[in-house]
Image 1 (spheres, rainbow, N blue to C red):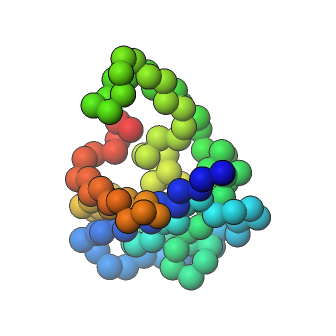
Image 2 (cartoon, one colour):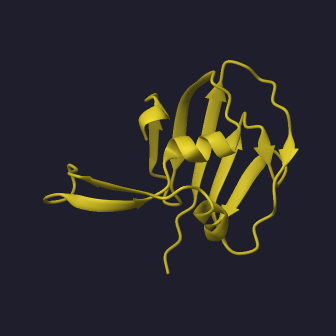
Length: 114
């Protein structure tokens, strides 16, 4: 089974965050979040396994994309729910996501919709 771990670099205008400990993953880590977040479970990062992510509200989206044919269904958590669960400050300027193969995307989009 392929597991993709994204490393999010959350860059903020402020450099101060309050550290709060989360539960430690009990299964394979599939998501690592780093940056100016207030919720941590390993050093200054948040490591999440599938069960931890499954605790967030699930959503379904039907849409078209540039890399698929026709309308496709996507199931999962919203980025805003993930960021809210980690107590991301509203001063965030962008999010960078990096896959294990070093593919990276940087977004300055407002995640309030997603």
